[in-house]
Length: 440
Image (cartoon, rainbow, N blue to C red; front, side, top):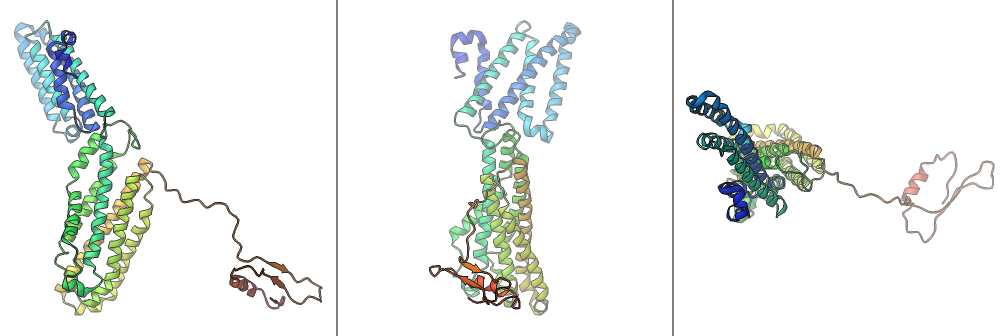
């Protein structure tokens, strides 16, 4: 479409050879995701405009130095601006968001200022045509990216973080069935081990989390450029996703160390008494951490309140306390046991504790994201305002003072009722015996 600026004669008469700048702009700035296209388009557009204005201003300023001094002044000005711009690219924040714009600024300013020294009369026209064609090419990319099958970087980042947490949860769930077997004999025989395909899936899951740092930072950078869309407003807290991703990687590093103990089956080397003492608490710790990560992944994916994970986190912390109590109570067994046989399972237990603490930090970060992004609350199913259910239905004839003819209280229960009268009997039994005599 933009090549018509060069091939269609009416437009070629207006833009001339500069029409190729629009084609080059589309090739340079058009990207797969909306944020990437917007980032490059805006960087190139503003950099070209600023460089064109400064280039024309530099040309007119250096003329004040005369015919002999003009080339030296122009060369010095180009050197200073190009050098300053090049060193600003080394700043991390500038490089992350404006590196492409600084590069375009250097190229355009050098082109306009140096070319203007030889083509004096056509300098302003050339700058105008260059800026116009760049704006046309960039605007075309932005329109196509947003309105024709848009792929949003923010949405991809959102799904990536949720997927990473789910991968960690799946690994812990698989680790529980692989390491904490129901039967030690089956474990020794190798009959209860997981299949090789399952192991490969688990390994690939947490490895994906370890290698996702570059993708997360790139997607977060592009997401900042995107306009508000769907459930993601313009000021969405994308930095919080990076914080959750960093904590997920920290958890994945502990899992990578933990993964090395699966093949060795060091669990069966420890004394049986010691194993059974810590088995319940370690299994509970691992299981609750997995459930907490599952709940957090679901909360992020659906953008709902992550309070469902709180109970699992608390139960995993309780399991740590129970483990400490069990170890203190098992001090006699530890003294008589082989230290080398206990060290492997102690290492596994220690890594599970670190994973549990990482899950707690992840839960806190997800709660913070929920507050910043205004996740919707999970509405509990409302109870219809029905009349309270009566356990017994009957008639009571109370004992009246001064009525000598009545010496008991009568309770009449319909014969068709299938209700249990036990609770009513308990209530009746609480009436003081000396106040009145009861008869059914």
